[in-house]
Image (cartoon, rainbow, N blue to C red; front, side, top):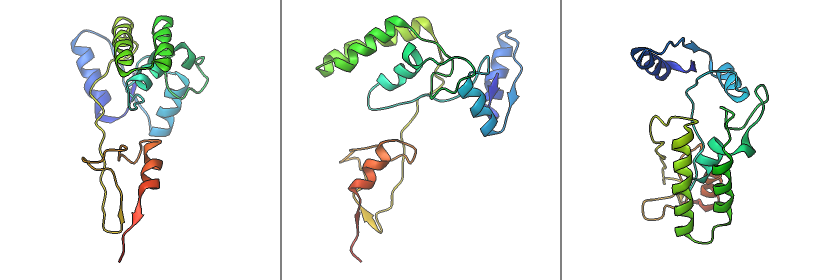
Length: 169
């Protein structure tokens, strides 16, 4: 198992309690991320992609279109698993005309995810951010949540920059 810090140690300890033999190898971030991107691991702790719908999460964990050979750098789907049934549902989602149709399709994709278990979510990824309106206004607020404020949220961070206005001094 490759991991970073305490998270890998906790998971390794808990797997050993279940009788699963685990050897944890920790690396500095650059080496760890390269191994992750190339699929050079048996078990890893990492993150997944998110977005305004579950589509991004599931596409990058289930779609054969995102699978790359071990040794080749992959943007995501580091475990190199694709499910044709899930992918067909994802393609239908891309063309869905209503939120109700999208919701129904994502429910089916979630069932495929549970059936194939390519990854085990450990916790939800909260979206957070902080702003200071001392010099600029226009940041997302609870009343106007037009984008995620998280600094790593692409393309939302660009959208936020297009909405900022200098404050008069």
